[in-house]
Image (cartoon, rainbow, N blue to C red):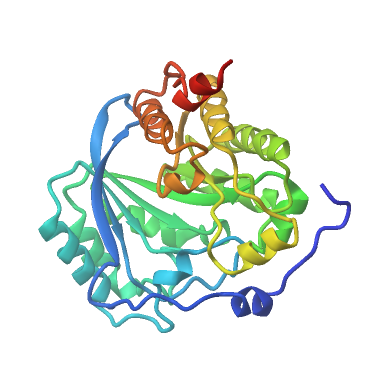
Length: 318
């Protein structure tokens, strides 16, 4: 890792972006139901609704979630209506994630006047999960928890425990900020999961694996109960520029497998690998789908599954 890492301003990060997608404030931009292993060890369906709302004010270097956001705060009542749209079309589930491409407790993203209506929509779920920035974890989170029937959980982006790289990601927080947020939430009986990047910018392949595992340990030490590892994707404009300058390359499938295996073997809480768009990380089109299915089964069982033998490797053997 270079001694002096480059730093980018909000304006530079925004200037490198391609155009946003065309979204409708009356509709969530995506929704689906998928199985997830619960804290109780059961595999149960989780409804995930990707809410359309105002863009996050934090301009993180690697983020591409802004692509499906608006430039202005959505009208009062729009978020509950979006939840209605999704729930009317989705099959039943016992848990729900309300992901809004940013921070649920950003008042300019989710109007606080909608909190009661949102709580009414999710009253039948055992668990309600939202995402939020560590610096926006305060008494508002506790007040929303009090509106819910089920267990409340907040997903926080740690990204990496490497202090210098975390600073260069422009996330506007420190490791201490993260620790304080987790401690506050856990004190108020709010569960916490975290997102951890595998091979963020400024790391080699080996460093990416090492710091993903160190970040998982850091998160568990802080009191997090679930870690979701996200292979760092290109495609937000700035990441292409970093790749061209030699500061970023996507992680290899072997690294993705190693981090999930070793993270689960810590046996400190659930560790998931984010499999969205995993195809872009395939080393080989023949074994890629099987390796993805292996990772999926590991997510569900939280046990290491037998490795997949690549047909290409067999064919290349003398």
